[in-house]
Image (cartoon, rainbow, N blue to C red; front, side, top):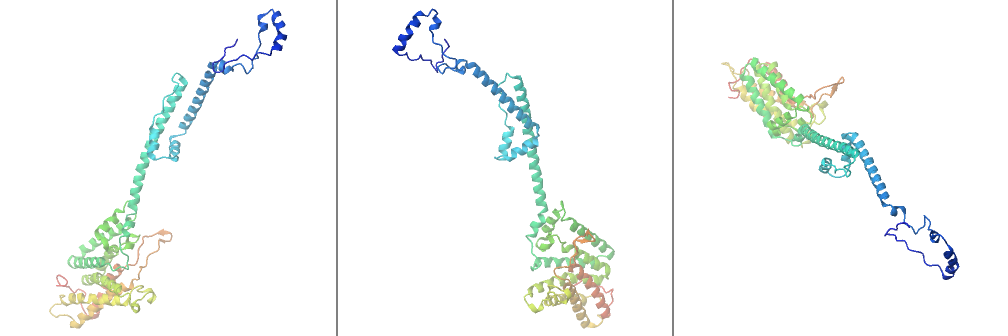
Length: 424
């Protein structure tokens, strides 16, 4: 008789009815074989236990085989994923959720040991999987470190490139009065005029040429990568004397200032060159100041009249600049070294020369339009620097030329020497 599982116990069938027993009784009594009296139950009878219940070891054996097969299958998938390359693994890890620190922690976390240590093939697969995982984690950390270094370098470069933009936001535009710029302008002009008067020409000109060339080189480089520290240095030295457009791609007025002083000292005699530089120091800032103060007087504004001459400037600013220069010019000519004969033409000649020279300097400033005429970005397809017509270059040259003509008109000698200290 087959063994019956305790979970599914076999129960005998109910006894047959009494009439049926009476009919079968002769057969039972006459049967010679004891096995013939047994009731045969079919192999597929629901009363018998299943094969899984009869032989449970077969079930566990098949389950173990399935687990091993599944483990080997998924291990092969992991190995294939590891062979793709650390870059793909890093990119896939970046697409998931969580923070960067969580991804780094997951990549560095060890893989749990194999649950089947006795299987040699499984151990080999496990070692390969562990090695690939460690290599992926190391490459992830190295790439993250490189990314941090690159991002830091890029941020520093962007901050360096945007230095002039940040500075320009702190500066005033050309419509502001900007007294600090005008005082700086006048101070540098008097200083260079004194140098031209006291230093011999063969020493002063090379020094000014070197200063002008260095300034031009600075202007050409300060907007390029790696040279933006020049903008920071300029702002540190000049501060609010700079204008907004001078940090937005245009040259500063310093280059044109030094170039005008150099040209005036080279082209004209010492006295005419010195007086031309003095008109640059006084007429230019004073005309600008009076023009700003009287810009609300409509009839004095030139706007676009006179063929573009003096655009966006005013007649009252021109007159104010000329009159501002008059006391200084009169004092310089009055105490000049005229000799024993005195001033040719007397006092009236000194007054006229002083007024004419002041008006010459103010007119040179008036003639330069605002905004200034700028060269195109390309000439015949070749990029050119942003040169423009600047009053700092025009005023000393025109004033020095006017001084020679005034001396000729008044009958004065071009070799006239000024006082030892110019004004005293």
